[in-house]
Image (cartoon, rainbow, N blue to C red; front, side, top):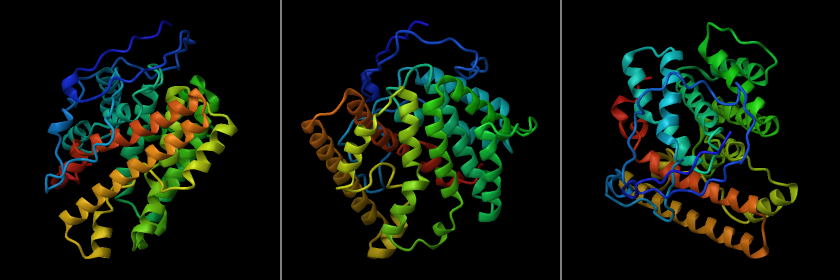
Length: 344
């Protein structure tokens, strides 16, 4: 299969066009990519960075890095969203429209702009179903949510056949069977990280978080730091050697945890510091900016000591994840339209 060319993204969208290292040869397989026949018009239009909504005091985003988006984002979003509109049992048309407005495929394409063309649909489908499950768990007790996820895990491993009358089961089963057929080694790495994320969703410690340190420690698992890193490697067909990992861990151990940390920490920090909500947002934006600079210093240190091409791509991918998450969080109705938060 000939590789698709990297399409330029219009400059007015504010995104960089990443250099995508597509393979010269691929193995054709009916399981290699999700079915594509149910494509719909994507729900998002990429907004220029300078037109995105910012916090209430009009403070600009951290702006240290510029996000990029996968060149096939519009097509892939239409394919994946179309499949879920057809197959997922949304409780109402309002919930379905809220799903389309959230832009889960868009954020995946922002996370992984350097993904292989044949793997980005898998990444979009996985993060989409995890978002949908997360919404379902919000209405369950910890005990019920834990049982719900525990039932899915052996299905995801391929140890138990799904109930084909339950979309969450057969979509998960088919998704993981397809990912393993594409690349078993990297798919298995993603699977274990996904289980860590799913267990954190029903972690009872989340109900007793009182300070920012506890929050950040919990969010490292709940936001899916390990999951996103493993999924990035799968999507980019990126394999790091044990030596590569040791260098990265050594550098990272000298600094703060990065990626996906902001989330909903505003109220916790406001309570701790007795600051107003706008003041707390300003403080968190400054903190995110400092983490970005710290990441740059770590990358510079690694590059000076010498690193492989795969490590360089991995570090670039982390930057895209963080800047892409910032871009999406400022534009998706999932977070900005809080009055309609119960649509799911």
